[in-house]
Image 1 (tube, rainbow, N blue to C red):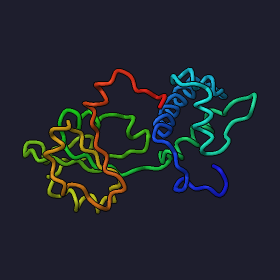
Image 2 (image 1 turned 135 degrees about the vertical axis):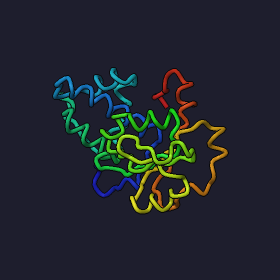
Image 3 (image 1 turned 120 degrees about the vertical axis):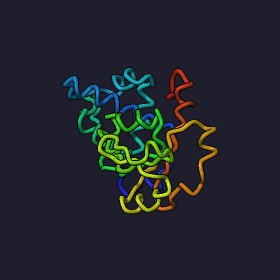
Image 4 (image 1 turned 180 degrees about the horizontal axis):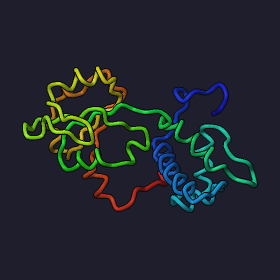
Length: 197
């Protein structure tokens, strides 16, 4: 990372952060294949952007590679995970145990990225008290109490936009660093994420 500059003072485009996440996934795949070094051109080809865009995105955070050699795959991946805040574990609560909620609790990629679902909430009496992946489904009115006890940092409401509009604002706990709403109906309606933004 550039000396004397913190992430708080850097103005990083949102599209860059999105692309870093995509680079991270690509580097995971490359590392599994046993590849040790990779060029910006290889990264660009793997994710569908230009080599110049890769270099520009990484340049926001310092110099990671060696000219003429490329990047060490493990080192670059570790740096990107740190930039994205994925080098630590995050306590996550899930509000809503429908089909999408169930899919998220069983998705291994969450835990691999450090997102640990520590509590699940729902307002359906038939779901309350059941256990999903070792986590008990609790009534929504206990959200604030349990979130504070678990030091929850991220909340997820996996629902469609019409349902979200009906969700009580009181569910949002001010102490959360982030309350993430997954509007997957929107993301899934797009065939391809445009990374060239």
